[in-house]
Image 1 (cartoon, rainbow, N blue to C red):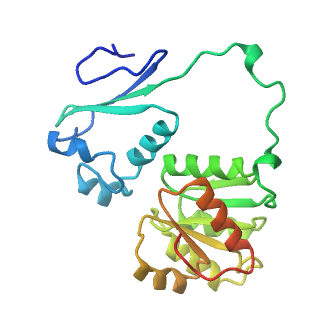
Image 2: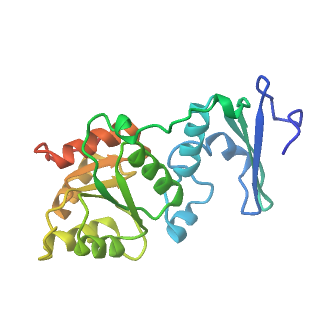
Amino acid sequence: MLNPQEDNVVPLSDPEYILEVSDSGIGIAKDRLPLIFDAFTQEDTSITRRYGGTGLGLSIIKQLIELMGGRIDVKSKVGQGSRFIIHLPLEEVEDSDLPIEPLNRTDLSSHQEPLNVLLAEDNDVNAMIASAFLEKLGHSVTHVENGRLAADKVFEGGFDIVLMDVHMPEMDGIEATEIIRASSCPDKAIPIIGLTAEAFAERLAVFRKAGMDQVITKPFTEDQLKTTLHRAVTSDRKLAIL
């Protein structure tokens, strides 16, 4: 817990809850701090090549915090690590204020049939958000972390649709989709939605050749995901990037 009066940390209106997350990593240069929450931004681009990822994590976190009416600040020194300070204007509630009955998941699905979804995503934050969206829409989710595991799960059967990250370790989404389409398994024609940060029209040819039905760009909203799922499982299966 931080002191809200600490330098560069401006308190929100009371009551306020503050959460601090610190690391001892490479740190962030001062001139990069204003950009670190932008999508596709990383302090050290060599991290992308070594570990994967596109610099979407902080952008997604910032969006989630702002949706809750809060904000996130960062302090960092190169070589000493970073401190992320999250401000959330939350109010305490009594148990008696909580709903007695949980929300009915079918009420949140907007009449879309529940699906058994296979989610192939190596980034834990992206997987958590996608799973939360899917479950809120009333769908069941099975998560795997690379394309090889995704192909194996499709061969086992039991899924209605696949959300396939394009860039994953061991086997990427393009290769996994090609293997599924070229197989003789009963579910080889299962709808596959590509997940990517490559929002470029020229990449459509690559996704189409691999056999993807739809592509959704990260970060995406719940409504965008819902629309893409509908397109993929209906007759409207013309490939497009949403």
